[in-house]
Length: 116
Figure 1: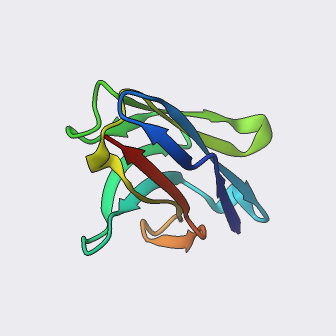
Figure 2: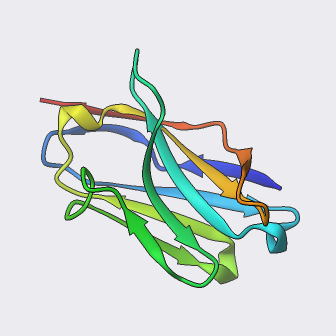
Figure 3: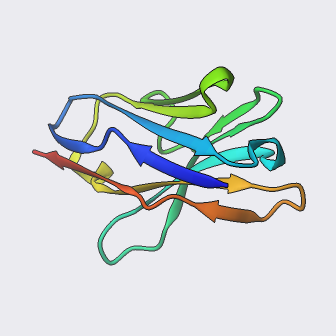
């Protein structure tokens, strides 16, 4: 499985970005796609999850501003981020969860920078 993130960039506070995570390879082995982020000097933290059955989860810190969705025909999961603030500045990664529950594959990350 290969994961490629895109859509990051530079945005002013209050702006929006839509990140994409395109999966290829043995996508049938993927049970869920997770979005994580890692700010400088911080641990990587979970942002949202989209599973094969269409169920989604967004962390409390992102709820109301971020939404996760998927296009199965394109094997792509999206993270729509609205009302961004400087605390959202981080490298955003997507990861594929396999049948055993572990995050077996990671993308290379996409940088999101929010200016005040």
